[in-house]
Image 1 (tube, rainbow, N blue to C red):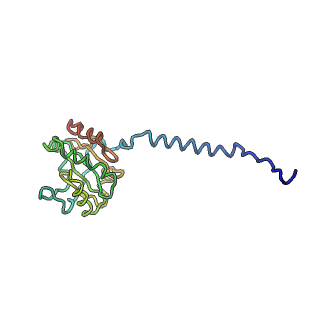
Image 2: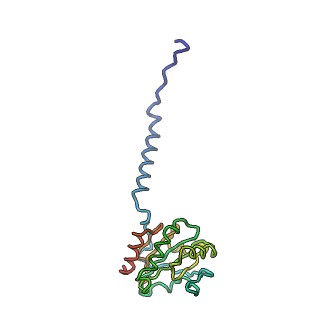
Length: 197
């Protein structure tokens, strides 16, 4: 054999390709599972159970109509009306996306007439940043509790912000939405709140 001739390339045995094929198949299975499910429908062990008792301070310096906005307290629940509880933070980009839908909820006749309440839990945030956030985007909440350490969120089973809970007039958790609300999810939650189930 002359030096200009090259030796034929050795074929890669199929044995070495099997791990690559298995990795590719597993990747497809994981991607299908990721995109097939509805991330906003994460199951919650608290659905149907009483909302966890928490004691939160008011967001310092937050005012509406010239009066301080009160803290969200357990006494706000179980008054015979549904309550929508939104967990938010000023540093949360998806919270900014959903905020107009919360403002629209607060402007709805059901909320204006007192049949449904919209309250907030400010999660691991600085008071000044939270006030600036609500001042710039509008405050849809009749009460805001501060969860500086994140303990209340743990009690409520929060995965991350934003999350929104629907509490029935009897104080039980009826529904939970993980991620930012959009027009459809906000509309469904408000309708369910008005129906009381």
